[in-house]
Image (tube, rainbow, N blue to C red):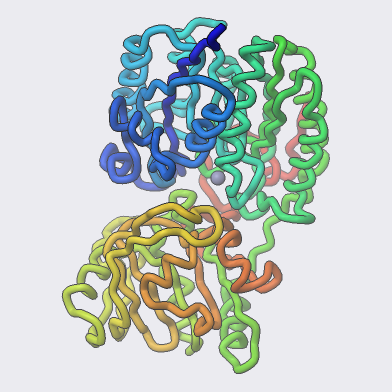
Amino acid sequence: MATKKLRVGVCGFFIECNRWAPVSTREMFGAALDLAGDRLQAELERTQPRTLPDCAGFVAQMNRLGPWEPVALRMAAAQPGGPVEHAFFVELREDIEARLLAAGPLDAVFISSHGAALTTESDDPDGELFERIRALVGPALPVLAVFDLHCNVSERMTRALSAFVAYRCNPHTDLRERGEEAARHLHALLARGPGVVEMVRLPFVPPATAQLVAPGTPYADLIALGQTRVAGPILNVSLCGGFALADCDKCGFSVVVTARDGARDAAATLALEMAGIVWRSRQKFVSKLTPLASAVQAALEAGQPGAAPLILADVADNPGAGGGGNTVTLLQALLAAGVRGALLGVFTDPALASEAHERGVDADFTARLNRDSGAAPFAAALQHDARVLALSDGNFVGVRGMVKGSQLSMGPSALLDLGGVRVAVISERQQLLDPAQLTVLGVDLTSVRTLVVKSRGHFRAAFDEFAPPERILEVDCPGLTTPNLKTLAWTRMPRPVYPIDEHASWNP
Ligand SMILES: [Zn+2]
């Protein structure tokens, strides 16, 4: 007897939204990833697709598990930014609905999701999308989604899903594995459904810098503990630290448990138990920022002969959480102190990159940083004598860490020498995630004494060979993505919430 060929709808909506960052537009999705129908279908069939690796992992594992056919709907993703232009979200959601209706009978739906989206009019677009999908496919069809562990979870989201799978690594190096896991759960649910998802959200918003998953961190210990509870009907335990900077009523550490066989009570009991354990460990999630003056001193020392390389992470200007990647507080301080051997990478300034390309390699000029920034938050202007050291189209293939093997672009890029401090200027806002972003500009990392990164932590997966964890300082500078949560003007965050309000309590 021939095995039935499964038909699985594939779609996605992927963005992390910082309440205070500039609006994320249709064009930003268009520039990053926005594919539908045949174009998405073709991408799903490629070995190195432009979709996120969770989708590629899902497809690859489904291929291994038996005959099936992906039915491409629509998938849109953008760099972290401000709330999404609402009209674009509505168009995307309606398009996914229309394609779902036109797809004919399906056996399941897979969603590549981030889970911390906002729009200019909605604080839970993810929930709205999942609810509409559920309404169209009916109550029984498995609908599975993969999430960033920085997702902000609502019951509207979990009620619409049959399986909820969050990354377990931060830096996020396990997207592909989580997509593979979702494929295995799909087969488990087809054999032993229905899948049910239960969640508990805590009044606890760990700062992003305290959410590192590395040996000995509290988050790693909790995630490992959660994995010991995956047995019997429990398919997945997701511990989602969340994204506080969304400033919405979904903010808070969420424990999300998926079970098969409709085992809702088992899922709910485990979610509550794990939430209690997380709550009791909340005081371990501390952010240890280095004052600017101490960071500059460390960079001066790292410039001395024989000193070990140093990384200064400008965590408050992380494009990976909606930052502009263009603040100059740290750069200015390093220049003023006369630091030698430092390299700032990568700094987003399309106008400066373009001017460097016009002037050419070896040109000396007055670099005007942030000339176009206008009212961009925190992006002060800075002028400094500079020489163009190298130019690049900014295309690179990742060699280590989160984007290893991916073909990516920074747009027209230039390496400038500001005297003691080199700056890798790019056109397309992004974090430093890979050494290849610097080597395409001719940088030999052995010549760098202090590497300054506009990133919260994902760089760690790529620059572990450059500097060990104890030589990484997270610097306290102003910016849109500051981990100093007490300094922000919250308007929608449910209060009291720990650690913004130290007296916050939780009543299960
Ligand atoms: Zn994340």
